[in-house]
Length: 332
Image (cartoon, rainbow, N blue to C red; front, side, top):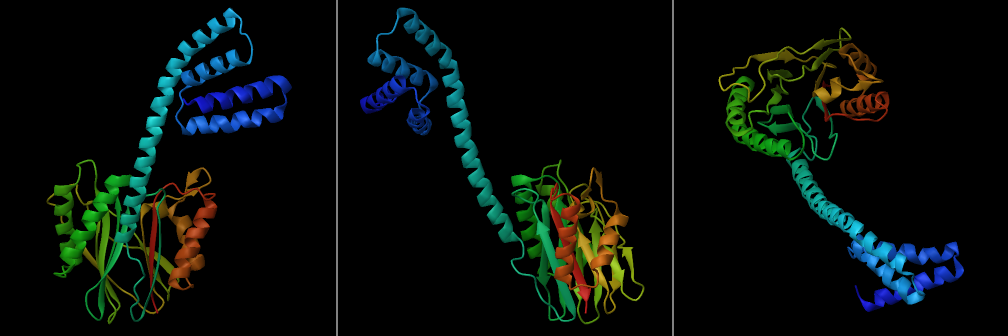
């Protein structure tokens, strides 16, 4: 510590001892914050106070002895203080890296919602924490066809982000050869099974939409079943298809399904962060979710997706426990 610091501390101590006014402690508080910034250890602070007291007035020997004992006690506090400071520095560095990884992860997701003739698309995708395990994407195939992918990666944080990156580039590469949904999932399953930790897996729905015939062909790999709304009937149906999640078995095969959409029909695709929303102390059941969907189904696709998210967050008292993704497709 510098001589100037010691002189400043002596002056603060003298002023307080002379007046013992509360206002005099303000200078001590400011100095304390400065000492923390300069990483002054507790034992150094005890020594500083002891020397300052000697400068102000004569100190009895038993007081000096007590300060020597206090210094020894503070040595352990000092070690803990330095460990805590080291942890804080590492945490700040890790947080910075997580923020960079989160920004990179967001860049992998669509930056804008695509538009296609005869179809409205709405999307809400919100991470529960800084980084999401949910994945979705769109890919344009031709003038009248596009693909849609929605998935959920087990785990959170950087491992999930790395897996998402791998999935993104695998889907993009395989998309160039325009595989059918079942073939796409078979190839993706091999990629995931070979390249991620055995404790991780990915659920996914991959589908292709034909805007000329308004036909949606899709296959499912262990993913949360979505909904199909039939406007003429005013009813919701569960989409068919289960399959085995990607990364579980190298030999998994997937069944292709097909639905044709009439005017006003709606597809709702989602991750389990939607269906496992909280309702008070219990979880939302699927019938409850259908009720919310029914109330909003006549709205434009994006507004419908936004309103469902808002209602579910209100129901859960704005506590989001899991990553949340919902995609709404409406035939207009």
